[in-house]
Image (cartoon, rainbow, N blue to C red; front, side, top):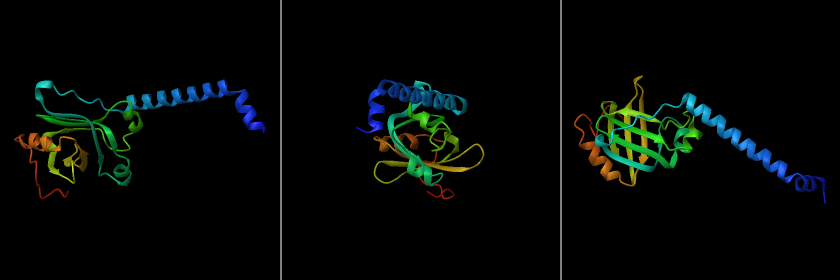
Length: 167
């Protein structure tokens, strides 16, 4: 038997504890980064919620990394009378603590420039940030038609086409 397998066999409990402590340490660091940089997601009062879905998927059109990264079955999407919130569910939000994948958004409905159906069950949401930057999210919802109907019911929102915003 060679030296390495003997070392592992002899020190297995110690190696297990080192790996466990390392994993806990990484989790704590990610949580602290999330708390320091993360924006709290405002709660929409239940009486103002038009649409809510947990376990949605989606990605941002910000760049190639965002398109490839995305989130699968861990987005929370809430459409209220005044705001659309898209957030990543805990603990998956820790993996995007620095905002790399651009999936944490609180969008006033007045800033949404377009909501349109995409391919299959997807919905494309185009909006303008507080800084004036145009952004797009592509959300895969299990109840996409209901989301589009509820978005259309908002008077201040143009849920179909806006020629100034390409989609």
